[in-house]
Length: 289
Ligand code: HEC
Ligand code: HEC
Image (cartoon, rainbow, N blue to C red; front, top):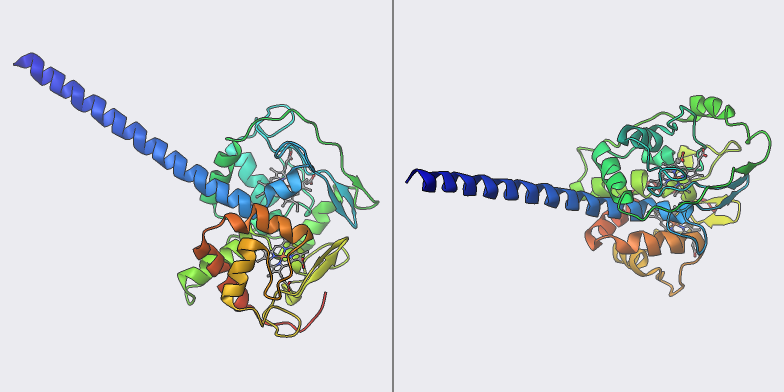
């Protein structure tokens, strides 16, 4: 009698532990899945992976200021970010400050990622940790004077950068706000589609009016009917984000092809509709890049 009670108690305990560990695992899995989506739209591999190189093993980025070598982001402890704490990762992504306390160049779009919420940055890190470690040291950036002086970034930050979080607009729908978050924070669409001044700071007064940066020519994506995407329907935009095919039958090329292939094409349709709704709500600007 006594021993059956004990066995029952044991069984109960074992069952409870199993349940506990399975919910923990399910939570972890959901976090990694969310991280994978953020990684896709965040375009991390577009910059941090070299042509034909191992994923996130380090890339190359040519700009009018010189050539950047976006570093290795794999979990390798020596050449990647395997030794970083979660706090260090959050600070790099949202404040643009390295674990050594140095400022990052805004070629790393922390200027948009700063708007991400902390659960998402944690999810992104959880996903990065699942990728294979690669031992590969990135070369130093090759920048023109005076851009090669990292200390100058303190001035740049003082002029142009304020850490900020995305704040939902309570007067808009949940879908609009989701689209705004994807575009403004994670998708960093303005980093290519918004023009910059001579110091590389985004000109928010002409947000999404199109921009030329080195070899990248990003068109006007405001709803202006002549210069922007005013003639595109929401369905046209969703189709474009899935396939790269424009309403006139043209296929997307260059940098945007990567944004679609590695990014928007992997998002659920509902999120693409949210992005389209947000773009269609922007103030139209009649300008060509
Ligand atoms: C447009 C190109 C670009 C994109 C997109 C990009 N990065 Fe970077 N990233 C860079 C550059 C350039 C640097 C180097 C900055 C510097 O040296 O000041 C960098 C640096 C970093 C660093 C610091 C690494 C170190 O060793 O100090 C981290 C962490 C990082 N990026 C994470 C990410 C994540 C996560 C994503 C995707 C959400 C991402 N980056 C997307 C260009 C990019
Ligand atoms: C790395 C730079 C870059 C980023 C980031 C980027 N784009 Fe683009 N985008 C481009 C370029 C370049 C083109 C022109 C491609 C072409 O015509 O083949 C383009 C084209 C487009 C077009 C088609 C416009 C037209 O008139 O043909 C749309 C719509 C668009 N982008 C939306 C977005 C959205 C939304 C995001 C963020 C999720 C985004 N882009 C992020 C560079 C970028």
